[in-house]
Amino acid sequence: MANTTDTHPGHGDPPGADAPMNASEIQAWFVREVLPLEAILMQYLKRVRHNRADVDDLCQEVYVRVCEAALQEAPRSARSFVFTVARNLVIDEMRKEQVVPIDAVADLEALNVAAEIPAPDRSLIAREDLRRLQAALDELPPRCREAVVMRKIEGIARRDIAARMNIAEKTVARHITEGICALANALYGDGATRRRP
Amino acid sequence: MSEPVQQIRFEAGAWVERRDAGPLSEAERAELEAWLAQSMSHRVAYWRADAAWSSADRIRILDSTGADRPARTALPAILKIAAALVLTATLAAGAALYTRAPADRSYATPLGGHEAVSFSDGTRIELNTDTALRARMTTRERVVWLDHGEAYFQVKHNSARPFVVMVAGHRITDLGTKFLVRADQGELRVALVQGRARIDTADKWMQQHSALLAPGDVVLATTGSMSRTHESAKALANALSWRRGLLVFHRTPLAEAAYQINRYNREKVLIADRALDALPISGTLSATDPDQFARVLENIFGLKAEKKSGEIVISR
Image 1 (cartoon, chains in turn brown, purple):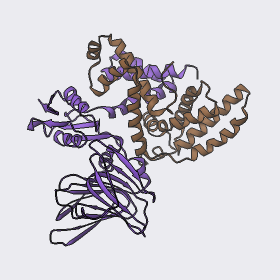
Image 2 (cartoon, rainbow over the protein chains, first blue to last red; image 1 turned 45 degrees about the horizontal axis):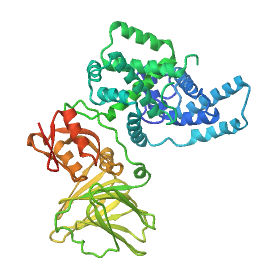
Image 3 (cartoon, helix red, strand yellow; image 1 turned 180 degrees about the vertical axis):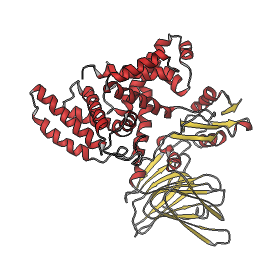
Image 4 (cartoon, rainbow over the protein chains, first blue to last red; image 1 turned 180 degrees about the horizontal axis):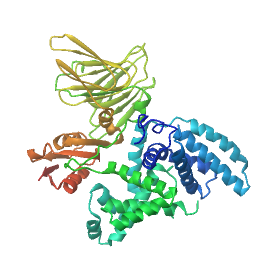
């Protein structure tokens, strides 16, 4: 950490708010401050976009924009920054489409409320995470779960998993990759969109 | 927003998997660097997948090599909202001075049971496995006698009607709290998570001792002695995991873990080899599934688990 005006980790602000962050600081900040907002961000996007297929892409675009902005200047509050970016992005999308659904404006206003809701206690998030992880693990397709459990829980080497499951190592890698994607969605998503198409 | 996000996330997941599988070759490292350098979108997706896969460590059941990462278990929601007191009492036969006190209503759970009782004043009591208590809730007083077992109290505080728990000759007075009380063999354990509570006890010469508990304080009391220690919020939360039907172990000696799971089940786990007693185990397990416990010991620790006349005997 290049920053000398470091604040306490785990609090609302990135280290030395206002100063630009370097790449590894952004990664830490993104994981700590931004990712936990994904569920509520997705809920918001689905509401204002009426469940259009592009909400995952919009969510990703919000991430890209906040991280790029953080390279220039670290936002003081990740939460209000994320939602400001989301709001602007949604407005841009609506302009492009030149169609503004009647209730979209009202929903955009609701965003301000969303940004005001106090963030849930971190320890609650942690507890919820464990529950989500366990649920996500249970929901994986059987072969995929088998591979993930052997790799993550039992710590078995990929080659040995392949031998045990009597499949190619490449297939094990694909099972585990799918597991990683599902676990990420379970942990950070809003619990609605799962499996990749 | 050119590449579809699902595609990027899958590629990111594949890189995280590749790195997890073993050291990257020089060429692979360069390929990953190049992929990450391509766009912020790639980097963000990679960070997300990497963070998720690391978090999943928490579902790992750990071995005794010490290469573990403590499970981040947190306080139940209800505990964060209001004050809470965790109380564990271990009763020696005949030690309960108050057991003959009259009580209006009795509640009990069988082995492995879990029940909740709500009262008209808004107070709620959850009974864990093998628990018996009696409650007197009148307009003037609220008293609960915990005869044995464990219960979680969520008390609607009312200074005109104090809430008192009598257990093993000790009296716990709620001063605006929620709390958990456990009672199983010889000692009383009071752990305050949030808020305030007072514990009063009388030693064998009938001298009164009193302690006011602050969050994190743990009082251990037996008939005639009382000591105070401090515990982390995590440890206290783990003590409450039964409310979700789980037992959370963190470097818990095997003998203690077996004792804990045996509180919930008719089919007992017996550690046949004394040398195994101290083996530290970590993980989150179902309280009511001794077979799962046995499988973990077999699969992860390479121990032997044999069923013998209603017991699961663990040996090397």
